[in-house]
Length: 67
Image 1 (cartoon, rainbow, N blue to C red):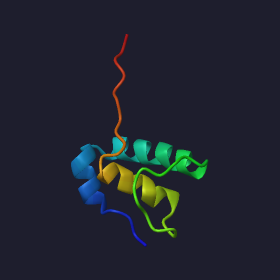
Image 2: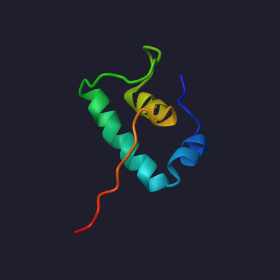
Image 3: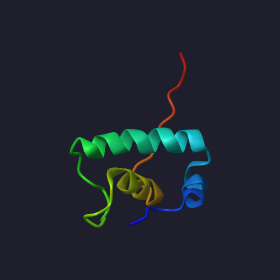
Image 4: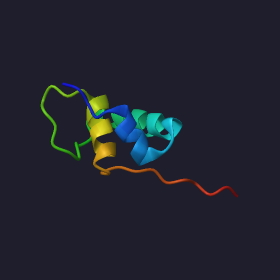
C-alpha cells in the first residue's frame, strides 16, 4: 500500500522541511505504540499512517515563538 502523494501533502504544509520533521516525529510515536488517528489498513507502515494523518489534518505543528 502507498501513502498520500507528496505534492498533496506539500499543499497542506507549504514546506518540505516542516513536512519531513512532522512526519518523522509522528512516525516514531506510532512505532513506539501511539494510537492511530485515522483508519488505515493493517499493512500500512507507520510512516504511511503519519502522512495520512497529516493529509487528513489530524496532526499539525505549532511554531514556537522566539524569546
